[in-house]
Picture 1 (cartoon, rainbow, N blue to C red):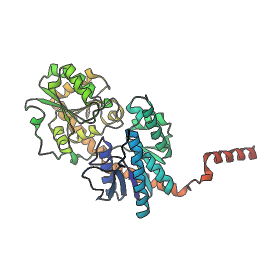
Picture 2: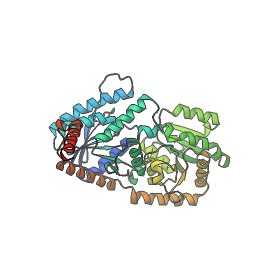
Picture 3: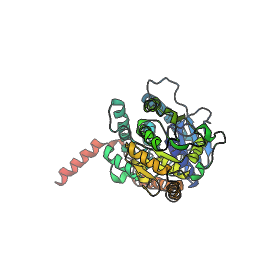
Picture 4: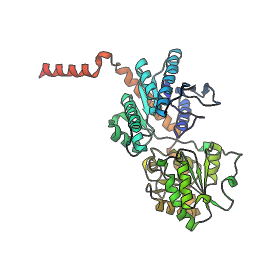
Length: 416
C-alpha cells in the first residue's frame, strides 16, 4: 500500500497538534508496512527530502510571493504542492490513496484525485464552525465551505472522536457511512525524555506547587477561564505557581487579564517550549489543566496522562470522551471558573487522590490509546477504499450530475 499524504505542517514546523498527529501516524503506518509519501511545507533547517522508516518526507517551499492574508498564502501553497505531487506521481507511481489533512491542502488533494483518478481520504481535525461557535464573517464562511467541499470530494472522512463525528454530520450533513472514527494515540515513551537544559527553578520556586497548561494561546483553549480560577486557588493555596506554556495570538490579552486580576506574579507565560521542556514541566507539575471551550480531541490530555500528571479538563468535545470524571481525571463544565478552581484544589490538597488518578490514567493510555492500533485501523480503511475504487469505475465527463438526472427522467418516463 503506497499513500500520498498532504499536510501543511509537520515537525519541525509545528503550529498546533496536527504536526504531531501526522508524525506519529506516519511512524505507526510505517511499522504496518504502509509506504507514505508526505508533501508538507518547508521549514528552516529541515531537509527538503528525508526518509523516516517507511515514510518519505517531501518538504515544499511556498512560492516567494507576498500574500495579503493567510487564505491567499494557503492557495499559493496548494499550487506549489500540486506541482511537486504531479512529478512525484509520475516518478514513483503505484499510489493507491490520497490522504489530506484539513482544508489547508484541499485544493491540491482534489486536483490529484481527479488528475490521477485516485480515491481521496480526508482527516478533519477541527472545523471553522466549531472553533468559532458559528460563522461570523466572510473568511470563516469561506474556510467552512472549503472544509465541506473537502468532505464532499472525499471517499471517506476520518475524525478522531464521536464528538467530531456528530459535528460533521450536523455542520456538513455528512452521511453516517462516510465517516470513520479513529482516535489519536500517544506513545508514553515520548514523554519520559526530559531536557537537561531546563531546571524546575526556571519556572517556580522549590516550595511552590505547580499548575501547568500547554497549548496554543487562542480563545477556544480557555486559558482565560483558568486565569479567572487563579484567585480562588490562591485564596486556599497561596504558594501555587501557574505555568502557561505555548504561544498564540491571544497572549497579550491573557497577560492583560492577569494584570487586571492582580495575579501576574503568580502566572508565568513561557512562550514556545520544546518537547524536552514540556516533558520536564509535566513531570514537575502537580496538576495539568486543559480548560478548553472547544476541543475536537484533546491530545494534550493524553500527553499529560502518558507523562503521569493528574489531569483536570473541560467536559467538552473529545476531552469529555478521554477523561472519566473521578476515575482517571477530573472534568468541569466548560467556562466554569469556580468549579475549575475547586477541582484544581481537590488535586493539590489530596496527594493520594492525585496518585490514584494518574495511575489509572496511565493505564488507560497504555490500553486504549495506542498509535499502532490507530494505524492498523487507518491502513484497513485505505485497503477498503482501494477495494471499493477497483469495483467502481471512475465517472467520465458524460456522467456529470445533469446527464445522470436526465437518464433518471428517461427511465421514469419509459417505465411509468
